[in-house]
Amino acid sequence: MTKTKLIFIGLAVALVGFMFAGSASAQDQTLTADPASVPEAGTYDFTLTPDGFTQATNFVVCNTGDASLVGDQAGLMQYCGGFGSGQDNSGSFTAEGVEVGEDGVTFLLFQMAADGEAASASVNISMDDDMLAETGVNTSLLVIIGTGIALAGVMVFGLSRRLRTL
Image (cartoon, rainbow, N blue to C red; front, side):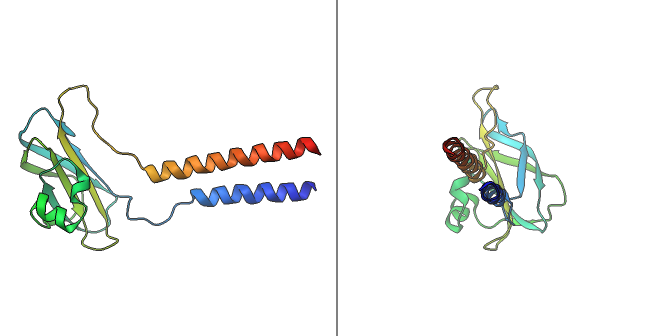
């Protein structure tokens, strides 16, 4: 009986470990803009730092601070005016004379492939100097971690009840 319990616990731990194992993904790229927010609409120079890119991409500046609006071809045409120009991503670069409107601005690096590398950085107008920049959260990873912890708790609770009845 003890061997069976140990095997069950070992398999459960292995299953939870497999849930947390990373897979190849095109979501490992980041783009940061400095400054991350501006005090008012106007023309600004931005230092952009790409990270995690392995190949050259297209670079485009979009006239919206909402990156979700430029996730498809129609959004690229409407907010960005097209597919942009080539960028080698070998290090930080400067975007000079960028016009930031009331809606903010989004910088986008992307490959024109279904599973290509992509990242964006949004710059919005900050009404308060104490506001933090919107950075986003990797929600899917948080869901996986939370589910794993919940399952581990259920498993421990179930085993503890079985052990008391023996």
